[in-house]
Image (cartoon, rainbow over all chains, first blue to last red; front, side, top):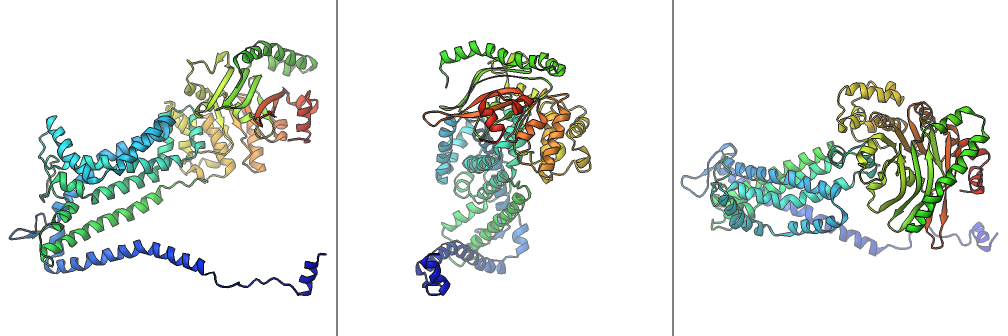
Amino acid sequence: MSTRDVELLRGDARPSLGSSGRRWGEDGIRALLLVCACVSVLTTLGIIIALVQPAIEFFREVNLIDFITGTRWAPLFKPSSFGVLPLISATLLLTFWAAVIFIPFGLGTAIFLSEYARPGVRRVLKPALEILAGIPTVVFGFFALVFFTPFLQDIGLGLETFNIVGAGVVIGVMLIPTVASISEDAMAAVPQDLRAGAYALGATRFHVATRVVVPSAFSGIIASYILAISRAIGETVIALIAAGTIARITFNPEEGAASMAAFIAATGVGDVPTGSIEYKTIFAVGLTLFVFTLVMNIFSTRLVRRYREVYE
Amino acid sequence: MLKGDDMETAQATEPAVRLDRVEPAIADRSDPAAVAAVQVPPVFQVTGLSVTYGSHLALADVTMDIRSKAVTAFIGPSGCGKSTFIRCFNRLNDLIPSARVTGQVLYHEDDLYSPTVDPVEVRKLIGMVFQKPNPFPKSIYDNVAFGPRVLRRKDELDGRVEMALRRAALWDEVKDRLKTNALSLSGGQQQRLCIARCLAVEPDVILMDEPASALDPISTSAIEDLMHELKTDYTIVVVTHNMQQAARVAEMTAFFSVDVGEDGQRTGVLVEYDETQTIFTTPADPRTEGYVTGRFG
């Protein structure tokens, strides 16, 4: 028995298990991290309040049903009309054309990177995609206006200068890296065992990719699509520059139409007097846009959970 | 990596060595079944096979024949290259970019590594079951139907699925819930599902890489029973950590060991290959004896 054991038995040198004083550093770090977490939450709350208050004032003057179901958007004209459907239809059309591009090309890129590309090709292609993701949207907007739309006109399409299809396609191209990157991460998480299992059954690379990897990574792929759709709905600068500011319901992709975000940007930088009904429309449309993205997010959380595969 | 001249020497001398080793073993034995089994042409003839990962020689200079319609077991300590070796038979090492296979593997006299051979075709004939059950996150039915579907053998699909599940001794347990997700099955059932999935492709050879090491004893025994049943129709090669398992299921056993080089590189080598009984009772090499009696490894 050591001296220490004897001391312990006698109770002479019993070690203290109580706190040796408050650890102020620990508390300070905890508080600092809490502040970090609160910034985004409080900002979101602030935005909602800032949106809702003027929007409520707007709906005192304009009937909510007229706003939702009206087919003519002319807040600056006399007599004015506040039907938001033209803005919504333009937003959805832009999103549709973007999706036509990013759904196949984003997934195709992800499959190529994850299943086909040799390490050397991957090393070149991934940074190239990240550069594409880092280009400011205003550059894409002008690319659509001064290069892509004229190109489509040159190959014989009767496009207006401002048009839905040019803007939508360029939004789609802009979103390819987002979709590819998130989808590829999901595919990388598919266990190598599953691929080996499929190859061992005589499956080709294509079969492994389409019948094992993509279904197994489906929840991540869906998540990438939803994020891209949310961003397409909210995309402002490209829509403003390349699809124009005329609010109208049109299903002809060769014509231009103002989306919700484009209207907000255009009106926000315009010279509408603060507090006027025209000014308040910004917030009413902003709230509509907010509801759209909120619904998309809730929907996506459900969908992603529905298709999630859990691997050990 | 073997140098060119080493390879040639190895290839020139090995067949003679192989005959020397196999023939007396049979002559000693008065068992006519064992003699007959050897006289059937082997399914695989491996000559001077080495595998390197990058600059690491993982398996060196293996020469052996795999007997038809029998169970051949590979035993040995971890890192001895037995899993690497078994993956040479269905060219699964092709999936690892840094892996390089040298030497020769003849499958019914065709060179598996000839440039004209399509690995996808190889894997249709040579199925594989993995260490960890790896069912696809699909229904039980879709798992078994996967092979026939990708091979475009979609006629009589229900019948093929049922037949494979019956042969894997799983049909009675799952016939009422073929549409449920395969991941809801127990580990042992998942492994039998993987065997069924492999059988549905109607292979000639089944490779099993430690098929029972992740399973409980009851499931393990079910898998071993299955191997006994299947060897009447299939050639089975099984890697196992479990020596009792090799003793129970295999006709032939190969013992692999690890050589540690001067630079600390660990390289797998084939120490001894013989009738299972011989390996476990009268092994020729002291390293084999040490392993099977539990003194080492």
